[in-house]
Image 1 (tube, rainbow, N blue to C red):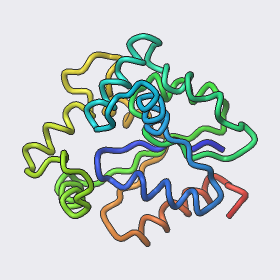
Image 2: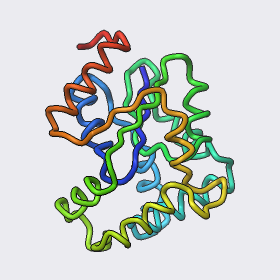
Image 3: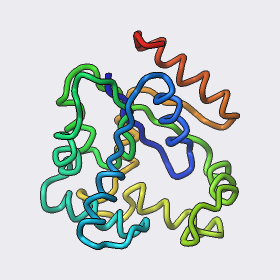
Length: 188
């Protein structure tokens, strides 16, 4: 089984991925693929550079290029959670792998997500104001971006399942495990 995870910034996609990993899935991150390739090229890792590099790969190789380039490293006999799905072309490439692909949207209100961003204080480059946060999110969602850019709004519309993550980690865990049960996942 392959579960792709998408969602807006600080919605809990990493937490949902962690829960899936604890339930037998292997992690596969399209962003991690970008990090490895950027390191080879000596490109500094930060959010803007990762977005720009992903856009470059999609512009050169088509909207599904990152998936096509990174797929050879997957063992198709294992269950994967695929993180950082950001363009509809990536979803289309993943769907080609068979009927065992599900796209999961993790969502939360913008105010909750902004509070999470401030609380995590992960990166000195992260926005400090709500206005900056909204500006960052515009690019993620695809506002003013080319078709080969990040187009998360379009990806969200392609989701097979949605979990609204506005409660505790235990609430999210219960929702993800219910989803796995509903999907008849055998490793529970």
